[in-house]
Every structure is written in C-alpha cells, then in structure tokens.
Amino acid sequence: MHARLPRRLRSIIPATAIGFAALSTLTYAIDLGLLAVAFDVLRLPYPAAVTLGYVVAFGLAFVLNRVLNFQSHGNVQRQTGRYLLTVVANYVLFILLLSTTLEAIGVQFLAARLIAGACEAVFIYLMMRVYVFRIKRYR
Image (cartoon, rainbow, N blue to C red):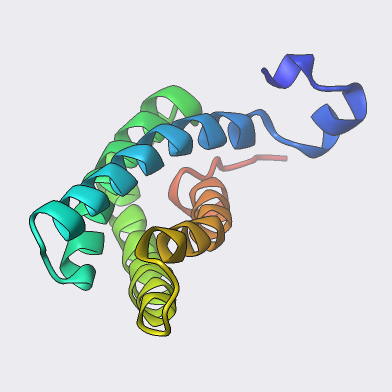
C-alpha cells in the first residue's frame, strides 16, 4: 500500500505507519467487540470491560507489529519490557482517564472508546517506532 501512495506522501509517511494502521484496525475491532460484549452482555463495570478488550488487543498488536510490520529481530525481552511500559502509560492516560471521563460525562461508551482510541493510536505508533522497536543507526 505504501508503494501506491504519491511520491510526496511516500517521503512523509513511513511504510511502518501504513502497516501499523492496518494491524491496529484489526486489533481495535477486536478491542471494541470485546468491550461491547463485556459491557452490554456480561454487564461488567465500564473500566473492567475496557481493560479486558485492551489487554487482549494490545497483546495481539505487539506480536503482529513485531513480526509483520517492524520485522524486528531485536531482543524480545527488552522489547516486551519497553512495550509494557508504553502500554501502561497509554492505559492510564487514554483508556482509564480519557475514555472513562468521557463516558462518565455522558458520552456513549463506544464513542468514548473511539475518541480515546484516536489519541492512543498516535501515541502507541510513535512509541513503537522510536522506543520499542527502535533500530540503532550507525554512521
């Protein structure tokens, strides 16, 4: 898909951003599906329902991005540790604080999660690219 972009966009948008968007769409759909089932069907409290979807989706996202998108061969333990730090920060800032606040002030629960998801997508991609799966460049 990256190769089909106009040349100017290809020079601005990294191929990993396109791969991240595709994989994130899949894992986000899984996240929202689990949220809907846990909140509407199982009647779990909203923070617990959000947590369930989040944990499953981000575990899957790590594996898929490591293997398919960033094609990383770095130390998996170090990357997992960095990813866990990133996920915890993301969880506290965007999932618990932002989405729960939005839901508490009356935003429909899936809309609250969608808004938080847009913010977290940018944060997670940047952290994966520069921190979790960073490539050492030698001059």
